[in-house]
Image (cartoon, rainbow, N blue to C red; front, side, top):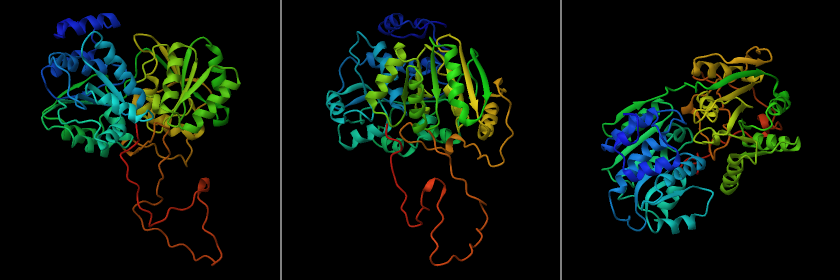
Length: 448
């Protein structure tokens, strides 16, 4: 069984697939589609770029085509949750391509866009709603949408949703869903929290796995260039000058760093843009469109672009800053070598990033080839690399280093008495010590 027709999909979907250029199912599609069409809950473990959208989208659309009448006002038949605005937009775009010429209605909602316009669209109901968790909760609170008749739930990039602090939002959304439903969960990694989430949301699920975690695409030529932090900008310039006509994606750890680097590249004559959590949704969409069309040759981004961004023209990925979470390296470089093409990924490693490099090589199971420079000695003060479940990101920006408690598990030494006129010592970066009586902030996680 190596064709979409052999999977038993609707002739209308097969025609749409032919028009959009989909010819041969990917491994995750071959594994997942028959189980989803049979009505089974499913846990899929697969990296980005393996065709997960079609793996869950095609069988859901096949089942929705059989209903024959529109959904009621504000009602949703199938709900797909994704962690970032960019991924929501991409999923919706693919599904709309599959449903051309059919009565199936696909709607998407994310933060950063007019909630009033989204409310108006949902008033007619939706066969498929693709949403970020934060914006969906806003709409549920306004009673602008009802999930009581939703028969299908898809959690895409579930591990990233947990990393971004969406666990409480997912629990709140689940209370609005009927108990009798089909649930599909897809994740690139399988930390303990994902397994617990699967046990909570899925009933007797089928498990399918392709491209085990840490495996990078075979067509990506990977290398590391050792340099000092202050020399990275000029090093990036030299690499970009080697392929001025080809598109490059550059990853920065922070929103501020991404914006500063983009402006510097523009001042040097490169056609560069940036996307990160401080950009409006309209700006992010416009920048991605210009990059996809080739108007922009360089895109500087935080990890908001590490997953789900499918731009086949990307030939080069530069990790300007190494990620704090080693699994994100796999997702970042997966933005190249798509659709059967080849690509190159170069990591810039400063002395303070040697621990991050070691963690990346441990996850991928292979040392990176040295493109330049000499390996640095590991700094004794290097902070431990965080695992995904320790990370909480907001708004799609770069991750902040976790504060490490000194002498964990041991009583702190009693400080020497200070003169009455002495002021509290300033903390690194100029921030004041936290108040012990401060109440923790509660939120639904990063707003989509």
